[in-house]
Image 1: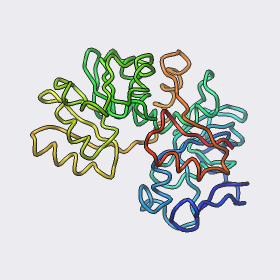
Image 2: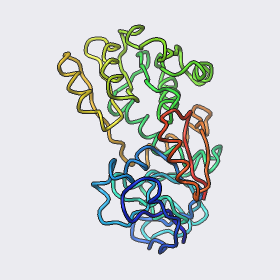
Image 3: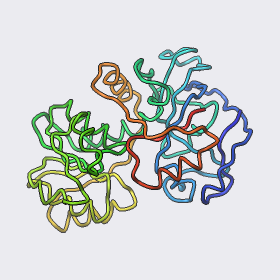
Image 4: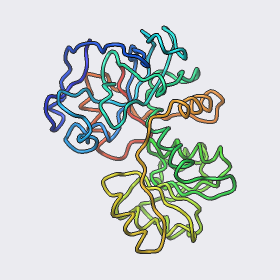
Length: 312
C-alpha cells in the first residue's frame, strides 16, 4: 500500500509518499481502507521531533491519528463492525497509529460508525478535535447547563466543535475570534464573540464557570482573569501548559491540562450528535495525501477556520 512515511525527524522535506507493507490484522482490531485522514498541529510537531515524538519508538513512522474509511477486514473477536461499514476513529494516541496510509489497523474500541450525514472528509476531521472538545468541556471542565464558558480560538478545529457542544449542553457560550468569523460563530452557537485583535477576553468577562484555552502562553494566562472564584481553565496546547498552570496556582486559581484520549463510546455520541443536526464540522481545506506538506504548512499558520483533511 501507499503511505506517507518519515525516516528521520525534520521539516516537510522528510515526508515521503512511498510503498509500505499493509498492516496485519490482530485480535481486537479491524483493517480499514482509508478514505481520508485529519491533519492536526500534533502531526507536524511530531514529524519535526516535538509533539508525540517521544512515544513513537523506532523510525520509520507513518503519521496520522484520525481517519475515516470503509472496514475491509474484522478480527474474529470483534462483533461491533463488519466489512463494508463506514467508520471513523481517533486511535492509539500518543503512540504511532499510521493513519496517513491507504489502510490502517484500528482498535475496534477506538472507532465508531461514521455519521450518515457526514462526508468521509468531514468524519476524518471529527475524531481528534471532537474528542478534545468533549473531554475538555465535560470530563475536565464538568460543564453544566446554565453555566458560562469562554472558548479561546473559537473558530479553530477544536474551538468550533466546543462552541456547538457547549451550546447543546445549555451553556452560555462566549468565543474569541477575528471579526471575519463572528457571524459564523454566532450562527453555530456563540452568544457573544470577542475580537481578540481589539479586546482581550478578560476585559469583558470575569464571571466564567469555565475557560477552554485553545491558545496557551500569555493569552491563556491572561484569560485566567475571565474566571469567577472556584472556576476552571482547561488549557489545550501542551507546550505552554506548565506556565499556564503555574500562573494559575500563583493567582490562586485552577488550571488543568488535557491530553486527548481515544474513546469509541464518545465517538459514537459525536456521531449521533452529527446526524441529529446538533453538530457540524467546518472544513478549512482538503488536500490530496501527496500534498501533505502543503497541509502542514497551512496548519502551521495557526489561522485555519475549521479542520484540515487529507483525501486518500
